[in-house]
Image 1 (cartoon, rainbow, N blue to C red):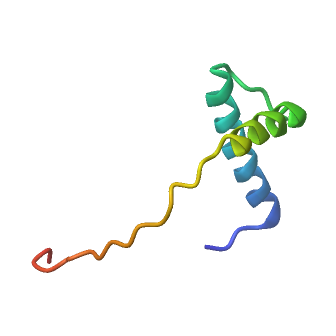
Image 2 (image 1 turned 45 degrees about the vertical axis):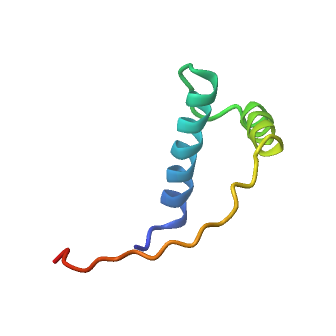
Image 3 (image 1 turned 30 degrees about the vertical axis):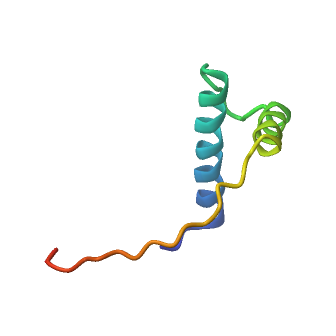
Length: 64
């Protein structure tokens, strides 16, 4: 999939808006409040916990 740069930026902006809306449980207006977004993102990063890696082998035998 190849998209012009501006389309990619707009897509990322919408993704960030969805996250911010979820975090604040409120509507978000565009353009985003970047300071608020970064502050809330940093909060989540600081409380993030490494879940560790697990190794899983998928057995797809008989699925087709």
